[in-house]
Image (tube, rainbow over all chains, first blue to last red):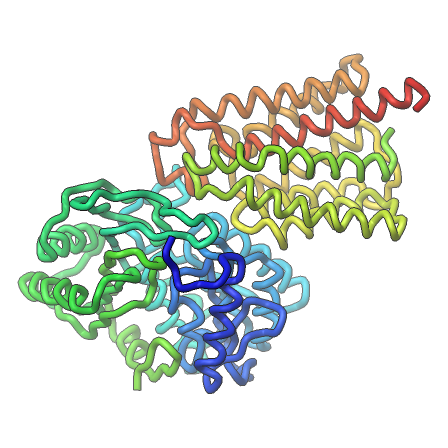
Length: 332
Length: 221
């Protein structure tokens, strides 16, 4: 294992210390917890948004703490959900009379730990609601499985629900708009190389030199299938066709696009993918309202990308355009 | 009857058994999960062990309180899905015996009813989903049915752990419908569920440790 770290046991703490040192104008870290909150939290008179999950997905979620997006982010161990006591501290630190919305990615551990924290917060008379994001079309969504995973589409929920909260929406309204985003967001990813969890010291899976995994999850979970590596255009066509097949998008409708890098794929390649996304959507008469290309939801040093589409209406467009000022996401 | 210090002894033994099976549980988990069940459970029960030292020093003899502290410690140290599941199990079990300084076999039934209800509530799992429930529910059924039978405590605890063992074995042949393993679909068949395995190990530890304690009593030790 070749990594720029000191000790696998301290990667999360040391990362958060460095993150706090880099963005003191935006955030502060709670002294005894792996929780990052807005510098001036709590923001009185506003519903607070709390998200989080395992570490290793930076800039998610700490990078999205700031005006117009999250109020707090809780960082678990690498690829492991944070525990309820940590989440509860975040809720207590940023919670307001207006309430707290928990934004959870659909993984068994995350859902259970956040739910427990929510129950504990309610015992302390804090109003709590939650939404669960499941945008990954690579996983079968049925009552017979845990359901689809939450991946890069999560960032659209942070942005739009965050804008609604900033605009003075009630807890019910913020939850409702978050659910609208979830219902209209679909993603799919692929990996060219695996990643190494520092504590494990070796890759969680292997891919041959000429192989790729289609539908790979952000923790290296298996996707739909393995295939010989193809061109960027062919891969983009495949991912986008799966995403589009799961949405009802009519001619003339509008979307936001996110081409997300998984950690070690250069921006050059992400733009090559985005070029093809634009070409395909234009051909189908789907209008691209806004595009985001970069690293939003990574998987340590995995190479690969995910493509996310969010179907927009007037309300979602307005909230997407609202100002956001966070370390990793800015809309002026 | 078990005293509070007997219960503490059983909990300590659970920690030892989990640590002994750390690699085994992690290996089972790496086939269908995320390869951390043994590591996380050991971390949790290590933390429980040091809490038990506190409990002994403070002479806490409320068994409900001891189980509650155990549950809260597991929730904040195990992480992943196992933390909330085992944590909830112990906390719900605690409610069944809050205030008691001794527990008999019917209290144990109430403890197990609470634990099972907690796990099912938290994990939204049913029997045959390939989870802890497959080991726990058959074990609770033995206790439910035992009322009309004339068995001594040790025989009953042996039947309880054998039912859990059978449930654990049963998970090999079925497809996962909950948790990370459910993403594998039919590919999860053939693998034994790590959660059902740790649940069996804990029930087996209860049987073995109670037998050891009672053996000492009989021998006047």
